[in-house]
Image 1: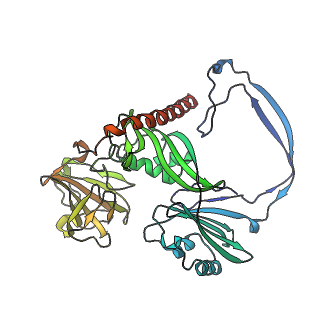
Image 2: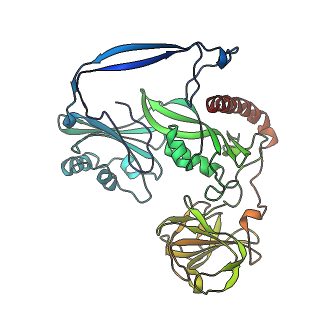
Length: 442
């Protein structure tokens, strides 16, 4: 049975139990000399395709008899994908997979001394096959330097192997349009959740995915996955992407330089990585923007709002928008629980109304861009759970959406030739997929 990529919530791929009675079904078959384009990963292109007006359509009606079929639910098996979370243990993962107590105990006993179980990396995926009643049959996890942890049940006994494997890479191309939310749209065209998350991270310095994304925005992604012996090992990385936001195209190409450094660049070789992310939250919406005159909901007076408020549930992780050093971590008047980070030069960022701080976050600690520094709350002068975020320049609050921020260096001259070769190949894939998607929409 094949597995399928899953979102952050656990999904199940299974053969659903069904009981079909014998019946006759009228089947309408449309025969056409021209393929209808859809959002797919495999396709063909005809150099001289006829116009759609010339398509000859023939309607064929067939009577098909479907025999009665009954499937035993108890014998059905399911493949789950479970993302490893920060601070996870294998026991916690087995609990989320709903593995029965006996198999959990037997698994932990068999996995004693496993290197893989000591290397549970947040963001990676564990694949598990189980039955409807919680019996664990197989568990796979790719760890370390392309090594496979494999636990299989044979004759009611778990057998473990850990070994290096050869991986086969596959390139996929997907395209879609946003109708409700970004992740609903990527899920609708079969893009794995981890790949969709990478898309938001790649353009995080150019697009605020919580304020700027609109219905009708489009995306195209070229990404790779890896498999071993025909079974998926892991979702790889985005190789190229385009996001059209409010009519403006943003494009990214993955490139690894001769010195080993890698990242995402524009087709012209400019780095997409900026010193500051546009948003400190991974998922949210803006409830109050930077404003010189806003009626304060608690003080009941008009005053400047020199920051951006992000409404989000209590406990939502807050990430540092840039590398920095903790200048303050504690409670401060209307801000409530507050973290202030000092960055290179004249920049500071502030994160207010937190419910709690990240573990070990003390004054003087270094943090990296994207690292969790606290969690959304409603401490201080707040009417509900949200994050108050400020970007300060020379001690003064500035609107981060209107400030030109420094970027990382572009492609070096010695790597430019290799970058252009990579760019041509990946941009050709983006263009092909975009054209197919437009044809499908028309």
